[in-house]
Image 1 (cartoon, rainbow, N blue to C red):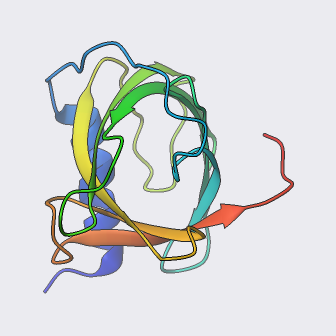
Image 2 (cartoon, rainbow, N blue to C red):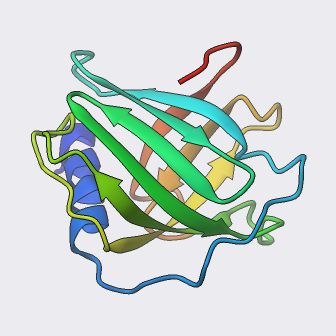
Length: 146
């Protein structure tokens, strides 16, 4: 049985190894639930990742020593089961290790499925549009600039 840490490592590896490139990021609607700053604490609580998700479809990520940028597309509305489809492509990376100890290579894309809680303060990121293989919660951070 895989631990949450193993699943997180698999998700990070997917970002580094998936080869499909998404279309250019399009601006999100001003009230899209993903816009903002999000933090996830790793299961052993020794490392966290912080994501700044911008309305222009770009992301700034801090993970351990890593600083990375990406572009993403995400569905405007959730599917009938409440999942938003997201495709994220790393565009820049400082070449330092992330929370899993990996070094991310730019140019790789990963597709994931996000489901938000009703208040929009938490989401989980899943490999498929179901809750079988997910990481999270990602917690909305208010008032923090990164």
